[in-house]
View 1: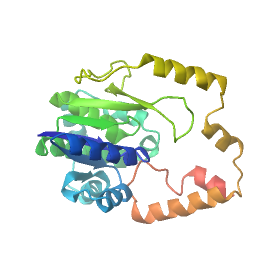
View 2 (view 1 turned 90 degrees about the horizontal axis):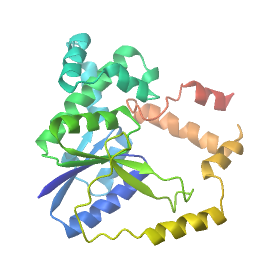
View 3 (view 1 turned 120 degrees about the vertical axis):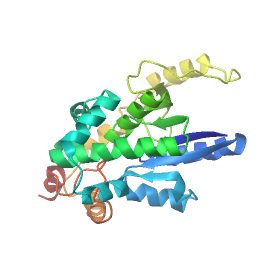
Length: 257
């Protein structure tokens, strides 16, 4: 039996779940999950995923934060030597974590390195699938490289430009330079399909939908009030979710005033 792991990636998590249903129906495998927050942890459980198959980084971080015996400098130095990767470099990649206080951000990275490697080893995971936006995703790839485990990066294509018809590609790692080897030789690469898709897209080109969202954004628009309400909820229920901007962040204050 093969053990694989999906990393929660907002809306794509729903797609991942549908993929796992197909895989489990047709192949002998066990699926595990890594989530950076409580809300997707609850969502996975509500959709039939055993909590033993989920690593909740936010929950684990709350325990580390209470541990006053952790010596940050010594731990960072040791982990950087083990993985041959600088904490400072990871922080520059993460647009939210890079703005957190240094001790908090570094403790979060420590939590990720220790808990994710422990989870991967205990569950005997052979392949991981994720985006490479947030620190927990990048750290998973670094760990997989150390353990010689397959790690595939999910990347959106830019056409078609809407969520309903969007397509994506998998790459090995986060450099976007290596396509994974397709072991199933029965898969057909239909070039005509992609050519027709591209030609039709060019004939009826429209800017990506997020362009219209930005262009039509108004301070008093109802969507802004919905976002404010959501982030108030996150502030209470997902305090250590570092994939969402803090409610107190300047961006949200600007929406109010």
